[in-house]
Length: 323
Ligand SMILES: Nc1nc2c(c(=O)[nH]1)N[C@H]1C(S)=C(S)[C@@H](COP(=O)(O)O)O[C@H]1N2
Ligand SMILES: [Mo]
Image (cartoon, rainbow, N blue to C red; front, top):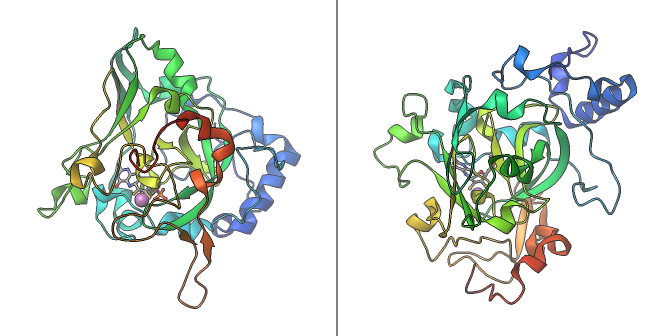
């Protein structure tokens, strides 16, 4: 999957949004975007390495695309939530570099015909990495637009052959206090591992994505290397990072944030401007980068703008009760 970078592009430039877009043009023009070098040859080990991928098709009716401005790489990688590395927005960028992501494996458990522990390289063998430009909105009312790289979660789920009892799917993040500073803190509110879950139909929905990269490169630690979930119509906390376990169950899993404050963070967590968080409104969001002088305040959209695709999943449900 490695694209050898042309030496005439200085690496200092690669991180800016405009050069990312230029490089996309470059990749397309040279045909490199689809030139794959086998993953097995190199493992899946180096956050920040170039990735080859199928670029998103920029058409107005493509749900995997938006024409909104991309969040600059610097903001997307330096304003993060990843409590395993601390609770400050700048902690993940500062401390996630200590996480070693190779080797990496994912345990698959519960209601499936093919449980087991799978090496990430094996899971990714032969997988076509595609690009999707998705909004991600944090429950704290900021949002970003990020060119994620990855593949549909549904493609992976099918390979494990869930049984008819598999009504929900639960995810867990790595526990490794030696490399995750936040897990060593005595003041941590989270009972590790970080846990999240989806209903099976949400998990199988074509928008639901497993990301292994962003901005043309393998994910950086702070964004959830080596593999994290993206559920673009839900508040960001559902999009669990650095996944090491997937469990299929017949019962709705208990999630980390529900455990901390069930009246604030529901299981569904669908973005909904009409349902306030108990401590703040959800009507508006700050699109990063945002500052006091330029707050970039925009209206939050129902289901984060993905209502056409997902509203039918919740037909007949009281979205105030199932928040
Ligand atoms: N394991 C784990 N995953 C996590 C979190 C976390 O603290 N730990 N934070 C969540 C929250 S609240 C948000 S908003 C998104 C942020 O993703 P980003 O930093 O890549 O933008 O990650 C989510 N995934
Ligand atoms: Mo969040």
